[in-house]
Amino acid sequence: MLEGAIGLADDVGLDGFTIRKLATALDVKPMTIYHHVPNKDAIIDGMVDRVFAEIELPPSGTDWKSAMRHRAHSARGVLVRHPWATPLMESRTNPGPATLHHHDAVLGCLRQGGFSIEMTAHAYALIDSYLYGCALQQANLPATGGENMAELAEAITEQFSAGEYPHLVELTTEHILTPGYDFRDEFEFGLSLILDGLERLIGS
Image 1 (tube, rainbow, N blue to C red):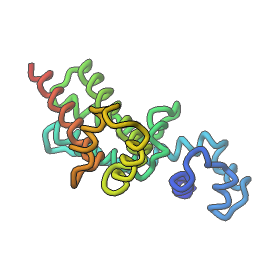
Image 2: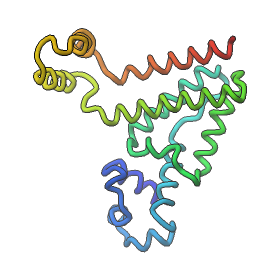
Image 3: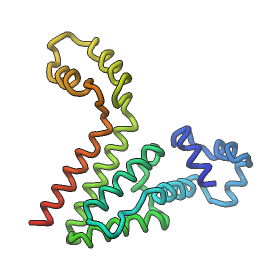
């Protein structure tokens, strides 16, 4: 049932997600679903826990930076597959075992990496704020690069006169529209900046 619910949410988004649509997707009657879960909120709890289970944990046997980078890229990939989940990842008041195990593993990685308890809290909040923010931004962008970005840039610049927004035009023409540009590549730059900064802090 949860796999079907996640598939439905991937297709229609959470706003379009209903028990009736889920029942249709599973080829059962709506009341059949309520034999297994008390309400829609419980289903969403289970869906979010399943999404957390898809994210790879920080691997052991390596330094904390490499482990946290690995986990961040995995999480980003999962949230690209399930864009509806991003606003819900830290919203559940009844977190499931996969959610709790994931948080515990990330905290353990940072603590074993030499972070104090206070710095662990700061680091986890900072990394995930960046991670979730990037996922939300990417999910809502009309284009990230290539021909779609060129068409979008052209449509926008046609709406204002030459010289009206010089810095925007400069960035667009000299960077965004250059061959090979993809906004999604910005994720690694920001992630490295955060991890390098945290490394300097705990080193000092």
